[in-house]
Image (cartoon, rainbow, N blue to C red; front, top):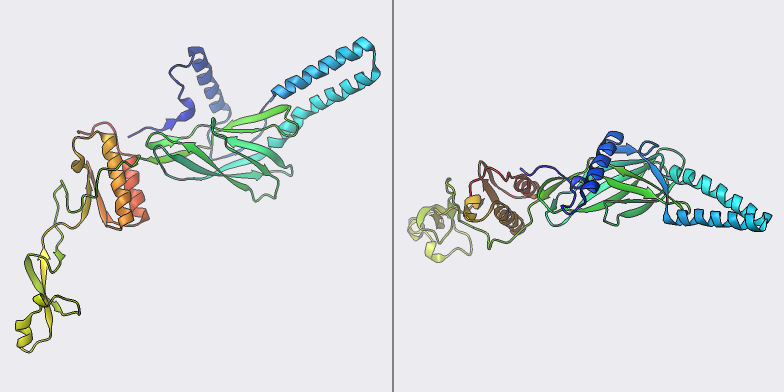
Length: 339
């Protein structure tokens, strides 16, 4: 079975070793300081504040005004400098307060196919009277969404998309929550782990038409009644439209009601999506082909069953049946399967 994939713990092979070491230690520190939970309230232990590039430029402007006021002994320039210094001092407090007290809660995640985007729904709620404005949430490098949580305590629902590459249970990375409100001179941010996990189905790949009537496994055959069968199965009441060739004239001549002859065919009319029908292909290709067959059979409304090594699911229809089969394909083990 594919193990849980932690995207924020996967570092590119060409990354500098020192950077990889720093990245690993940073994640360990975050895990201790802000462990995974389905609901998180941002506070001083989870929030960080630093000046932005605009903030550094603003600080440089203050320094230049100070030098200008000192050089020319201009009290007006000094007054402007002190005003800007006071603004610079109180801004990080307001930027921090804009995120502090915001509650994030995971609502649900939707299954997705490998190579597609997984969607997760979250609820953002105020825990105090303060509004939370221009809050950005994202899974970098995705753009994410920018929202304002200014209404009552009913919350604000958002959706985030994450690109998914491999099938199985995929553990999502930490979510970046940040804000530069009110003036963009300071950035307050946090990396939140809401224990988001996706169930990722194999990527559907066509393997040709549905294998109707074909099965590599053993099993009982279902009898199909049809006028074109080979063996006589009995009589049924005649219905308008029945072929006159199959009318039981002998019984009718004997004074009985009008009947039609019914014949039976011994072929297996059940649709079995069998692992052994795809012999000679690797495990992931087989799973992708079976996934495509499941989707096609559901669209065609043909009852279908699934045979995998060690497990068999009886034919059925419906969204629950489809989800069950796709889940089995998603969590199918990679190791220990003979080709």
